[in-house]
Length: 568
Image (cartoon, rainbow, N blue to C red):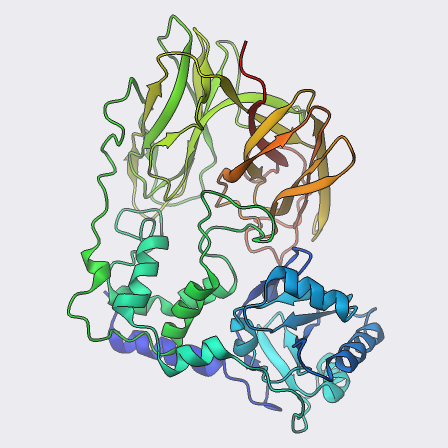
């Protein structure tokens, strides 16, 4: 249990650290992340190899904005050859991506144009006026200077020379408005009616007793105690696990919080995470469905995976096993359900249909493009049975087996996992067979390389319908994008993962299936961060090539699809 006074002390400390007075000594602002108009991900701590990150607040409605943009870009040109990064924060409340891009074009902005439609980062940085500048120290997650644009050059010089921060003159110019945040601050969200429902919907299925989350959010007291961390993971876009660029594609299994939900959660935290007057604690009342029950009735076939002994501590590599099937005739799978033996340690499980003599090692060791029969996968929070799109399914030829890939995470307690799979079969073959095609590349990542780019491509020889996409790299993975190049040359982005995480690798199910005509060339592009500023990197001094172990690397984009024409 978390002591209320201790939790309140953490909250107060967090609020004090986030406060920055103009001209004051460097003050901690904490980590944060923003996506820019080009879909690039920017996180303060990831710039730890830079002397400074310099940001300016932007509001298109301000009459002096063009001259301030010009002055700021001239300042960037002065310092371009030094280890300093410049960017502009579009602080216009609730600005859409299209509106932001239009404003960027109108003002001819060439610097990274970072989107902050919720204005949470702008307010956290203490920016109050359009054209106001902050000079941030990425290594210390602090603000060295916050003030007028005219003093920014001197403040950068002081930062590089190790001098004290320059006191800013009184700010003038257009006031930034924070309508939504001000309304929330005036009337903080209610725990029972505003906050708890968001946590129940988006967080509690993993953050519960026995869940994959490292702590349970099963009461107001627990939520209050963990609220400083919750604030940080929301501002750095680490949680919930949906690292995609929202401007590209729409997905059925989107777990992202809306801007309104994030504003409510952070507004409630900043107000001290009050309990409110409700007599009943909604989080304490949550009842989860029976994870061990078959949701679609008794399966046609049940597969019991071998018992896996999981130690209390340590980093475990993937476990690949084969399961023989007794089918003497062809089968078509309509639905699949996974029942995890111990979901507190089973991070994910992938299941493939493989030939009797096929040695499947969980990756494309020859780095070529291969089409496989991917049955389905289990991931944290994915507890519902999965039914394939209408009149489609996975084909299991007679005599074939299942190849299963397990990924476990230790949680301080030794346990045994015995996972079960349930298969529901078609009575008659469906019209379409599902495939998953890997599009992979060979590569060699130098030691300490922060942004090593890799690309792969494949051309479909038949008309296909794409229904899902999955990015796969290991600890050094930084970002990945999926693009279709039509036979007429037209390019269309289908998925962008600008903030890749090895811990979260779902198949993103397209809300609307994408038809690709024969001759379409699909591209998978991305990059690796092998620097010490990648918090997941186990060893930046190592040069990396393809390898099956998690401390090696892979670069594979998976395309789930079926032929446009029905089966013969």
